[in-house]
Length: 274
Image 1 (cartoon, one colour):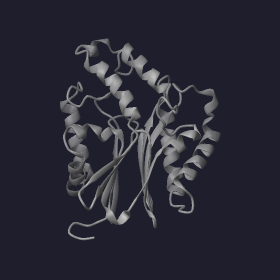
Image 2 (cartoon, helix red, strand yellow):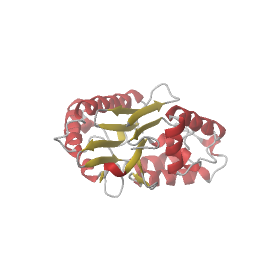
Image 3 (cartoon, helix red, strand yellow):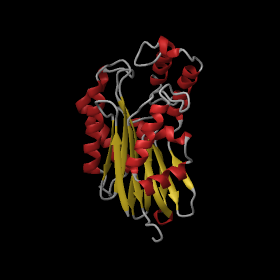
Image 4 (cartoon, one colour):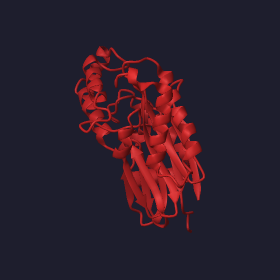
């Protein structure tokens, strides 16, 4: 059994993080407040959750949901969320896998993806697509204007794009919007949960959204095979090369040219054996 991870940012501050414990692994993909320039706040939030999960994830007598709910309660005593609007609040998508006797637990809030490759060759992806759908609305606007770069006014977005981003952010942790890890404990009960038969799994990979451009290059099963064979670093370097070649996001069709990219690979079987 092999478990390893990688995270990388082209910015001075990485808003992603990951953790590997004896029984589990997780990826955090932080999002800063839209009405705030305080990038340190999301880095601090992600760092807090990384430390918290490294301490508590292997408590197998507690459910993943209970661990997250207790974490939100503790984090809220530090972050004082009542004074912040949804446009100011930081948040984080999260993907967790944990090995138990009953099987492999998988949990997702937001657009982190857990990809499971079975010994049969079948691939299953667990994620919440709602953030991707909202992002696609903005991407469609971006792609409709070939001269948009000349009109960018906020963090690389035009005024129209920025207003649409804000409309979507106000839907955070609502039924008509999307659910994500932040200050609202109700989101935990809206996460994507699955219990998989561990003996049937070859490997699983947890991706932050930063790896999504490679979906334009490889089917997911092929991408997981490349990570197994060539290593996480080689795949990350390939990702950055594609981004540089597609600076204006014509091919990859995403919100940003570069994003923080994080992946955890957990292989349960060895080549040629169990």
